[in-house]
Image (tube, rainbow over the protein chains, first blue to last red):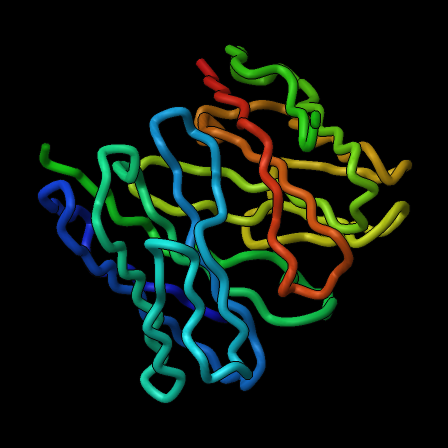
Length: 119
Length: 114
């Protein structure tokens, strides 16, 4: 079974600075998908960014970018120019492609990193 | 723009009671799933469905039943509630079963079992 590890339970950053959240995963698959989700106090799960394992180019979405290191099984999220609205829990998630059955067809989540933005 | 709708938002049950958490999506998504979120943990997959009439178990299926009679609806049933099932439950849907598509989440149901 796949596992996802987020080693930083909590991170704090000054507003306007850059912060990097870590994520590592364990899999024997060569093709898979990785996601970062944001969960603000409202409890909604909001997709921040996604990465296909077969793509070498790191995904970017405005102030959010990833550093995807496939060999190291690492998928970190960089938030540039941090804003107060970025304060939330951030979850890294993994998924294998297609439908395989046997309980393997959903997102596997890490335990999350609580991001605090200091004004 | 309803997206994924979960009802109720909050519920308190007594041990042994049964109930159904409702989930509906209006995006014609094939894939739907249920997760539970416990303190200090990420979401864990309970059950999922890749289309009407097809369901499968996830990581933590015990104590829960699901069915998928229509594309739109994917209810989660607790047959005999236990305190260990106190959690926040999320329903999600996804277009197709190719996993590069993002999952859309409902707002969650906070369930307390006394």
